[in-house]
Amino acid sequence: MKTIAIAVAAAFALAPLAAEARITGVTWSTVQSPAFGGLSFGSVGQYEKLRGIATGELDPNDPRNKVITDIDIAPRNAATGMVEYSMDVFILRPINQANGNQRMLLDFNNRGQMRLGRLNNGTVTSDPVTAADAGDGFVMRHGFSVAGNGWDYGATGAANMKITVPKLTGLPGPSYEYIVADNATTTGFNLTFPANSLDKALAKLTVRHRLDDTPRVMDASEWEYVSPTRIRLAGGAPFQQSWIYEFTYVARDPVVSGVGLAATRDWVTFLR
Image (cartoon, rainbow, N blue to C red; front, top):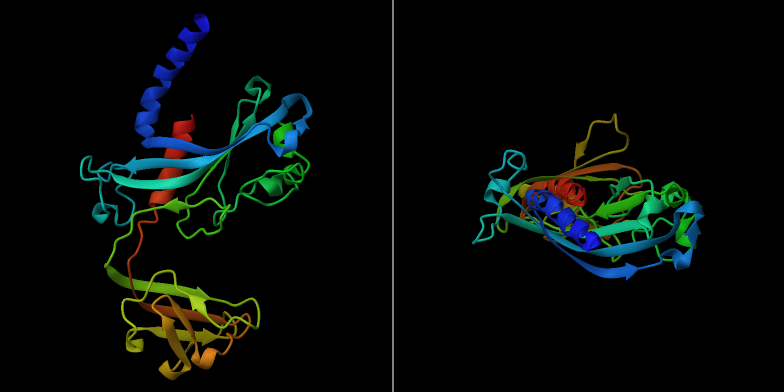
């Protein structure tokens, strides 16, 4: 009964933090215990991995959130007036947490790809499974727990960490793309946001060989829209390798991408 009482007290102690953090729910889709094929890490022992989806909400009137561009016009929950999001979440922790160092490492991913594998000299993956994925186990041998979450709305890939943020459907505005092909075979470029119009007079594509060169405005006949979300050079010619192309145009349907950073803030607070 003492154990039950301690657990209840701990739950009540955490409740205000959870409410303040605005993480409204977590659903675990994958639980691997033990992880890494049962590999053990020195005195810390075995680890377990959890992956799932967290939902959250932001108060657009909170001063900490009002700095997010366009959150004031983002779609809101009709009942609560909150701006909602959902994101992939990840936790890696010692099965016997008493053996850990009682510290959490936030893996702030790059385009959805976690960096844990780099620290461990192992496989770079956001979904480690095998003993090989653990590499030399540097992080685990030192007893760290690891947390990750989707924050970059542009992240793709089945295993990478992604987030769904509000979209401002139909809203037009200026947009800019910096295009550099690292090969000689790239024949098209996907735009971050769809063009509001396919009228090439409303867009401009420039090119330069080196960064110090003066950009040349390309004639409208030198490039074309493949679709509202893709452009290419005339006739499908490849972009010059390592040359710098810059595309400015009127786009539509932007997203409130700053929600991703606030979601990371609130995920960390929730875990604390």
